[in-house]
Image 1 (cartoon, rainbow, N blue to C red):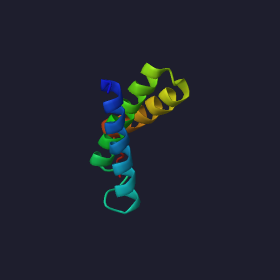
Image 2 (cartoon, rainbow, N blue to C red):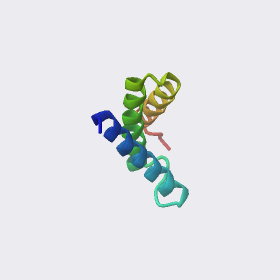
Image 3 (tube, rainbow, N blue to C red):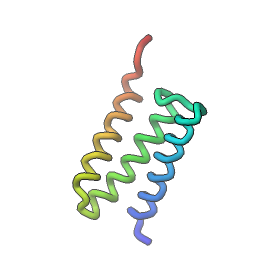
Image 4 (cartoon, rainbow, N blue to C red):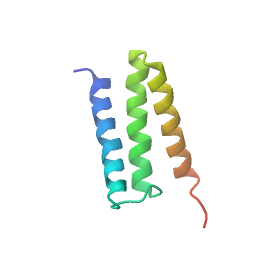
Length: 78
């Protein structure tokens, strides 16, 4: 199995785990762990999509990862 495929599976697990935990009120969608799981998971999925030429998915995943990374770097002030 290719390294990018292993990364894609890991990324998929990370994104699904974050989503499942958030929908079960285990973590908040604004928590650092959620945002890290989303940023890293989507970055891994984006890499695989880029390598395989799946441009719509690569663009979507890349934007999603960037939004998560931005939210980590610039947390909301309440």
